[in-house]
Image: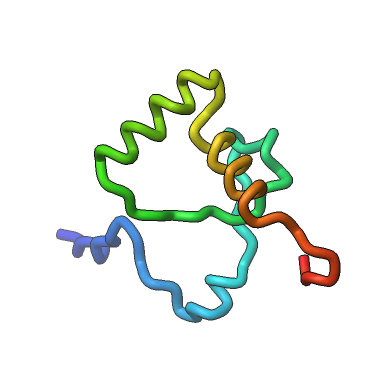
Length: 84
């Protein structure tokens, strides 16, 4: 009988976390049109707030991601002299 291969978990920790954090995200086929966006931002919100955000985006006829990108760009404009 042959031995079982070691079971791999869903995700494993990177060997070099600093290099992993600084590495660019691999583009997915789904995000081909969003090539200008280079980072993902994850935040924790309550289910109620998430629902309100989704409803507001739907009423405006945009995606949640596009609405939040616009909001963040408006609230945090680029300043001359700031590193890009």
